[in-house]
Length: 225
Image (cartoon, rainbow, N blue to C red; front, side):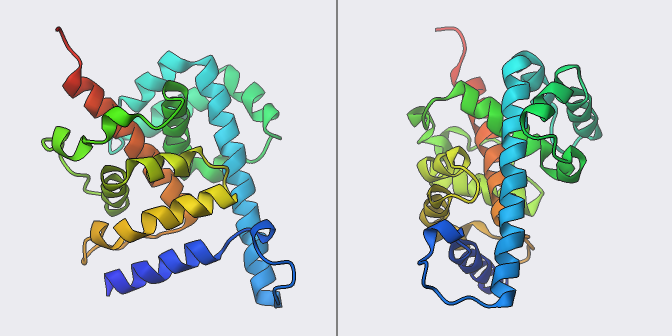
């Protein structure tokens, strides 16, 4: 049943394309317009959050990396991210993205930070990560279903995962990246797990997984020659 519900969620993700990508003459009803409005609102919040953390990481690259070094399942992680967000550069970065309600996006802070650090480090998908499944065989899996799901997607299709977090939320490029990841999704879900799959949660999970895989690979391949 989990696989069936996941496939339904994936279909909803790919069919909920932004209006700019739909045919102008396509019929609509009040319900679909409402769904589109809510989707547009979430996309706008995601774009604002991406802009905020890009600014924050640019100004505090070392502090950002230190915060992400704290495991996500530790209580200290949330506190450290909160401290970074409230630091001196926080208000000015927030003003730069329109002063949206940052607190409403608190569940996505770590993902936004991870995305910004990853994109700052890599101008393009790091080809060195392609053999990640073998290289990171000893890295323990995540107990959180969404985190495990996203890590599996990254291991199975790094270029598409990379394309997803580089894309602008709500854009055709985002939809294309989700469609490219779709074939790998059923095989990445535990039948007993429950994954709340939305475009925002997928972007967040993939961003964290990409950053963690990059960090783990760097640690396993770096060292004295």
